[in-house]
Image (cartoon, rainbow, N blue to C red; front, side, top):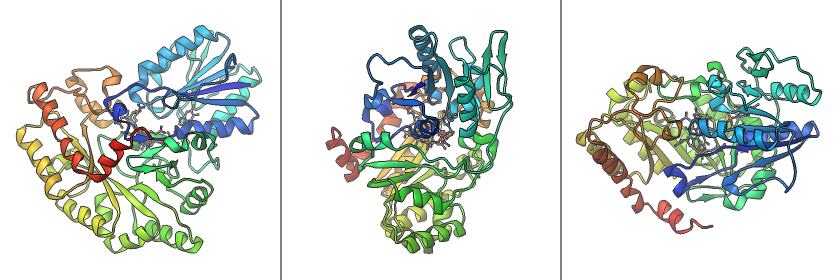
Length: 425
Ligand code: B12
């Protein structure tokens, strides 16, 4: 059986600069499942120019993509159906998992809303065996008489599948996290233990969180020949015990890995005495969602952090020689004063690398429910965190000028300049 696995992307302002370029890790997991079943699977990714061998017709096409690609996935499915009418088409991925109803269209045969790779394997077996009895869980199937809806499904433990790394090695010289090159993605936990109202991740796996297994995570990283490992779990450590376990394993295994991961500001301040040890254990860059610099906004987001502690978190990382990417969100109702408060915060704390998003309610989040009636734009491709989808308080032009103006300071960062001047590499 020939399978095409495609990550459907739409261009955003972010993709013009392309500061982060990584492999579509979810497809590497699916490829591992298909390899085991002796299927001939190809990962297609226009971003990397990877296409299947000329003249090869697929029996099955799997399409994934994020919220911005919602319409594009449907458009691509229709183009494929025209070209390969006999091929079955599956839509899946984190956006589909919570938004299955948008994908039950004529040109898609299966809407895969489970995160389970085991269920994926069962579905593939059914397709190979021309078994027409639909699955009752994890997937919606299009039958002659209409859609058969599968029950929602969660996973409760790691399914023990390691991703196929061929894509990583083929693209390795082009993979990057800003100035850090040859970056491999690694995933260990599932879902998120926190409950921030704007965040989509906490909804995944029906809100059921599976914590990381550090031993397995480190073992997996050791098998990949990368310069950096970006652990894309929503939080790398939320407790002291988890960090101690990680340090202990790295020391015992004498591992030398360069790791990028997400940490919350409250963890950084609370466990400050561990930061140097974490640096020695391999933590090179921390990505922290500060979101806002005033507590009233953090409260609205149900972020449960204290903005008063943010300067300390930033200083502690600097002292420990750990790079920081600080993530901020600006609200559509920001006025001049709010933009100025954020600008001053970034300047006075000498934050070198930061990203700014426009607060964007993602479908199925609590925030979306609250703001749905106020949305001024419902086109999925606009939900890239760089467009206003809620009416701003300031005139649009001034809002965007202030928003993009806030990025200018990034040019004073050596890391950002290094990235801009070596972009073609
Ligand atoms: C790293 C990352 C990126 C990377 C790309 C990573 C990649 N894999 O290609 C970069 C930085 C480029 C990126 C960009 C964007 N991202 Co992003 N990103 C992430 C992050 C942190 C991790 C994603 C990842 O690689 N996980 C590792 C993989 C292996 O895990 P997974 O996708 O969950 O897949 C597992 C299962 O779900 C399942 N599975 C997945 N797909 C399928 C399909 C089938 C058929 C089956 C059976 C199973 C299955 O198997 C996998 C193995 O366990 C997530 C947060 C998160 N927790 O998911 C956000 C996240 C996915 N991003 C998000 C968004 C919105 C974006 C952007 C649109 C906007 C932005 N400014 O960030 C852009 C758009 C880029 C584009 N043009 O497509 C949202 C998506 C929301 C949604 N409803 O789709 C998330 C959830 C974060 C959030 N804000 O809440 N992102």
